[in-house]
Picture: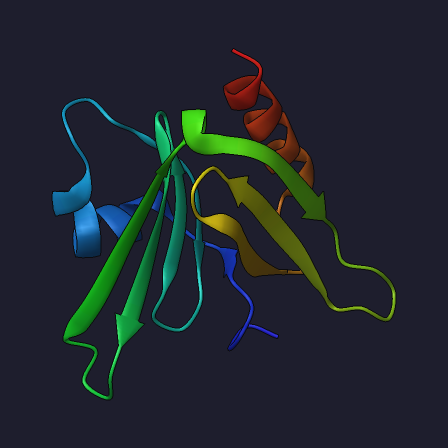
Length: 119
């Protein structure tokens, strides 16, 4: 589960490894991490860091401002289904999907997305 699905992670870990992609007073609100990749929800946007290659020296940074998200879906894990999903429907990009682990705070993420998309 933890190898392929993102699990809740510390914002400090993201800032240590990828803090250079944050701007000004931007704060990390929620962070998820797989073995090497990150999915981060900040004050202003969603950032996905895709670490590629054997050495991990190649990285793709994908950023999606909340204003570009038309809709979202958050699915929690079930009894037999050990992972949950986050789906973001992004203008001009289509759907972006992330698998998240059983212990992820889907209630908190639901509240965050509702606040960001209704303002």
